[in-house]
Image 1: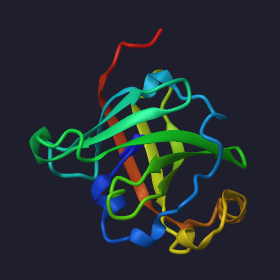
Image 2: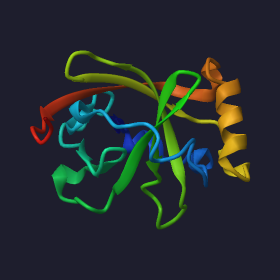
Image 3: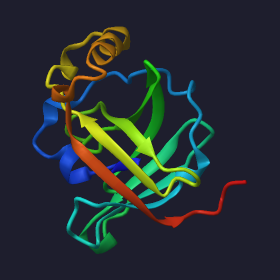
Image 4: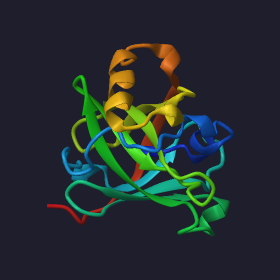
Length: 172
């Protein structure tokens, strides 16, 4: 999941790749405004279980609340986090608090490759899979690493394709 959006492919993101978690976000949480049209229920195309989905809700003008629903939707709140956008070199990244925070706190990052227009019904993103993300002492070093690898395919996982199944009407 994003993916969001959203971000988010929980099985892809949280699998065994725990080293791709950063203790620092890519940027300030209150710098890039969210897109209200991304609110809704999202399905990851690569996930073959039809009962798994993501709920992306506006928390404020800069952050989303994101919940991953699996097990037929029986686990709301168990895999829940916050997400916000950062921008590096003109490219948007979704910073998602690590859903396994009870084990390893931190952030995972989704590079947003495409969001359909108008109304944001489809999104393509890829997970930053670099295994050195946990080695940095601050977000300035982390931003420099991401900027250096902005167009390096080896820095990212496979493309993730999200489709919005239901749009929330809580925006103007």
